[in-house]
Image 1 (tube, rainbow, N blue to C red):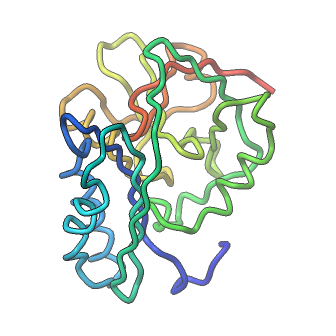
Image 2 (cartoon, one colour):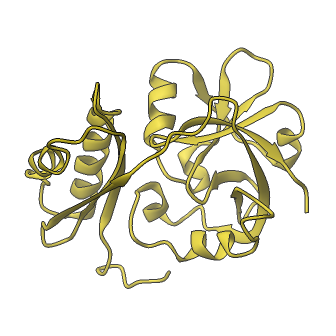
Length: 213
């Protein structure tokens, strides 16, 4: 762990589009509320008000970051965001760093980021656009900033279970609720037997090319 258990904040990273508003807002707020409740944080009652305030007058897409602390403080920042091209393909590699499937905080998006930062640091930006992590059992879990999806020919994307030790991603939740994705364990060999995708709520679903080390 990079921080003491009582020294971290919850995070939500949202995409804002001037014509349609916040993307997947309901799911982001639901995850924030659920995580706060499970951790004994106060209810984030002012989150929506502060989110709406930061985008007043925005005329272009934004990346909006919300952090919510144990004492109930909500902080919001916004920056310009350029969506990926529809045909973008990200190069992904496998990290040596491992996730601990017993660490329940991995299921929540927090500022505890050292394992993801260590994984990302294993490769330069010219070597990989994203780095995927396994757990101590060798199960495929997630990327440093993305969830993992595999089109293995059954008509519905497969995505690893939360119990493997990974974030309950907002895009992942949406695809499962829409029955466009199903939960199923996967190993490295599975990634060779289908079309690989990664994604998050900010960027959407991205085609990925696995580069073996």
